[in-house]
Image (cartoon, rainbow, N blue to C red; front, side):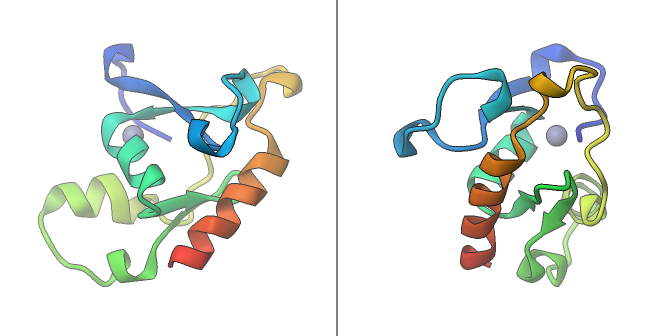
Length: 107
Ligand SMILES: [Zn+2]
């Protein structure tokens, strides 16, 4: 989802957290920049099992500078930009569904 050409700025984020028993596997992972990794972990944004980004309503109603606007709010409703060509390597829809429920509960 990140429009950044620098791999140095990307983290390997867990969909299901380590602390919740999430595996360190490709299908439990998302390549996210530092901002989106933090936002995902903090339920500021969620990713539904159909690979669409959802931003928490209270965040959408917050008005601040261009970073919040462009980096977070404008991601709402966007589909993930790049998925692995091999289906077996794509983020697990089951894990995303489980994680998305937690996002919705926190929203
Ligand atoms: Zn990002």
